[in-house]
Image (cartoon, rainbow, N blue to C red; front, top):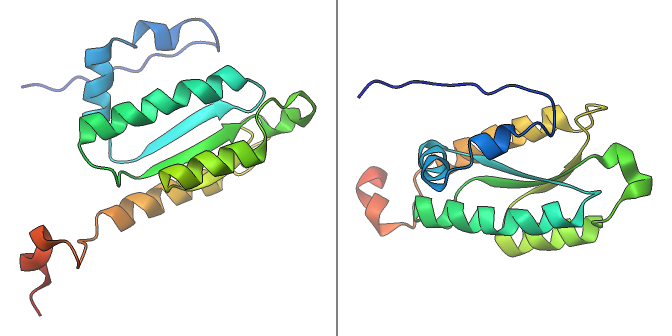
Length: 141
């Protein structure tokens, strides 16, 4: 089957996500993804609530709990408008067993570190688990 990669561009809030949010397409993106950055706006409590089912969908599609995921609160440059505390983000990341970061795409705060961390997480996940019986053949000394 031939693979087509389509990029959807446009200003924020024009409906890019709405155009590509068919459940079957989202499952396909998730199935092919190796690492996931789950982003919410720390100035929007609803966006924080919205990422919880997204993580559930990743686990459902991947059929594996230990998928490389980073929870990210974006827009830290708008501290005075904050609706989601750092503690709330940190607690959810702890519950999920994943890293947590707060970033600002606008001021480029922690953005490089975010992508370095997801690559680190994906590289770590690619290592065979010595305690996993299905990988015991990989660990012959």
